[in-house]
Image 1 (cartoon, helix red, strand yellow):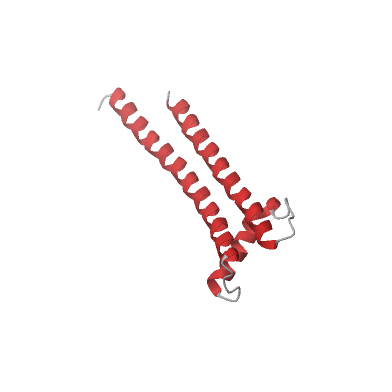
Image 2: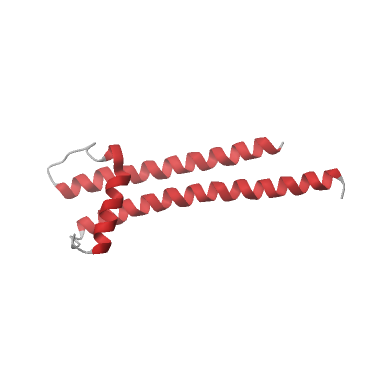
Length: 112
């Protein structure tokens, strides 16, 4: 096998690996945003907080919402959760998109 064929093969493998990493970043960001949106829905629909699934989603969202927890403090607790966790979900998706784009850009530059 010639060196140019090896280089093309390495380049193709590298491109696939970079694309897979970028996709994994976006899937992770979407999963985090999904948990936050699910928690918003469970709160607005008044799901039973003693239920194991509701409790798990609530604990996960409490950990994921981080600094957005008390960013806005309207008098209605449901509104507070919807606004703060919705904003956190949007930020996670935007950050995931930026990181995935950076991975793709860096991966393309390293191969050249």
